[in-house]
Image 1 (cartoon, rainbow, N blue to C red):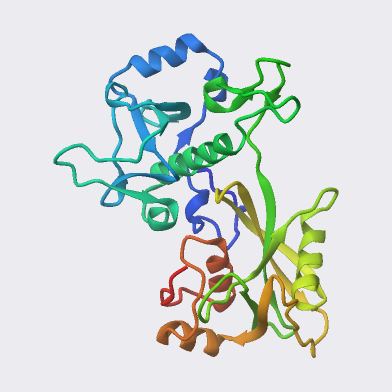
Image 2: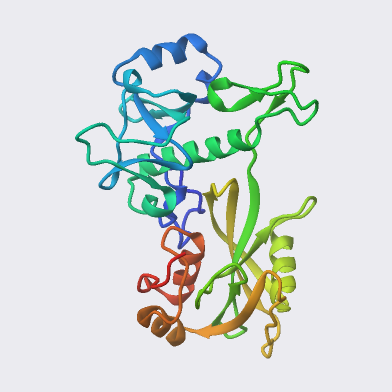
Length: 314
């Protein structure tokens, strides 16, 4: 039940912070109301409190409640750990507040996703993903009627036309492109970012398109560089709000390829050598993606090891 998505032998195996898990989702119990009621009544059951993408964290661990302590909000069943403990999330209607005397503070995945253990990381990713989906899909897309939460939080049902609606996941590609020699990597700076921040190229998979075709299209659209040798390395959920990031590497076809930013998604795109990456990340003149991201792991995979933590906020 590790939940790690990179293929066996992948250099990304075990290094993707949000691809970790140590619980069994036991989906067969989601429609078993008696089992769910018994699990909720068990004082050993743990409840993950969530509001606006944040939960209460004490140090490097989630501060769970018991069902008896649960606040008002939508309830989702998350799974069972190796010790048989059942976990629920409650998407609270009010901002989080820690109990009197507690050292716990509200924090989101971007802040603590990389330091939580496998169990807590996997549970928080699932809880955030479900909460984001529920918040954006409160009404039936067919008739506009308010929908209700069923199947332990994994379905919304319309009481008017009885249609069922399921959590969505949007596949997106992210790719580390190298030049023909493999000595330089292609990074871009988004129009949405401030400062000298650069990252790998990325984009959503379009309808009727394979992930590999999306890699070729997105790199061409954003940089004008033609690529080949597209290789899949691993994937990671990215619930901001509902993406699954599919990580690839690719190599430019033309040794003299000159990247040109599209001016919309990217304001600048350029080749970086390993010495430039190392020096820029060390002195803060180059902001690289945070350790939580698959983009960071793709860059470090090409670079050959860990890089200094990014100096610019993301």
